[in-house]
Every structure is written in structure tokens, then in C-alpha cells.
Image 1 (cartoon, one colour):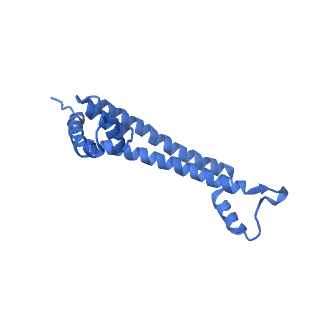
Image 2 (tube, helix red, strand yellow):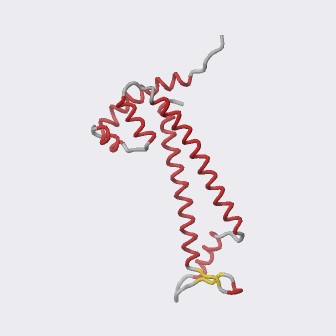
Image 3 (tube, helix red, strand yellow):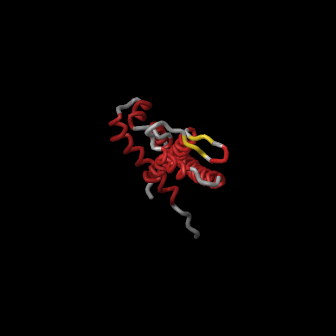
Length: 165
């Protein structure tokens, strides 16, 4: 793996975590929306509120597929998703710590700032350009190249394994 691929993998991991969080939130919102349209009714179980011409059956099918019959199943699904998110967050923290340690070894502060903003803070090239006082194209096409080259040198050194004599 190259140094640039290492940095890009951190950005991808951030995106993956964000997608999982959105998935968790959407599922919860969708489930809650369906449950809000239903109400408990004595011994009959759940009765779905509907107006004339509504698709009550379709709503019932949606509700049945979203809400497991056993509340423990729902809890376990939520817990499994949170465990996955937490494992990925732990990995992201470790990768960002390693990246920061390497980036701090760069002598040029502009290169350090570019790498931190782009790869650790997930800024767009336009945002990096604004923060550094350059145009987006200059940052993306020129400054990035020199910053990545400098990072690659430190990356290679960090990847070398000591040999026993």
C-alpha cells in the first residue's frame, strides 16, 4: 500500500461510518413512522389507522417486515449495527493517529495542513484551497502532488522493517 492509498483509506472509512450511521437512523425513523400510524387495540394486537382508499394491507406488510415479532431481535439488530460502527470508529481513530504521527514529521507546514484538512478532516479541495489561501485547482493539481510525495517518503521509512544483524 502506498502512502496516498493509506490516506485515502481513512477518508473511505469515514464515509463508510457515516453511511452506517445514516442507515441506522433511517431504519429507526422509518420504523417509528410506521409505528406512529398504528396504535394498540385491546386483544386485537395492532390496528393500523387509515383513511378511505388507503393501502392498509401494504402498510401492514411494511410494518411486519420492519418490526421483528420479538423485541429482543430488534434490540440485537440495533446492538449489532452499533458494534460494527464502534469497531470501525476504533479503526478510524487508530489510522488517524498513525497518519497524524507521520504528517507531523513533514517539515513543510503547508503540506502538513493540506494533508490534515483533506485526509483527516475530510475537507473538499475547494475548502482546503480556501483554508490555505489558494485556488482549488492549484491545491488539487500542484500542492497535493508535492505534499503526497513528501508523505510517501515518510511512509516508506515507516514501513521499513528493522533487520537483525
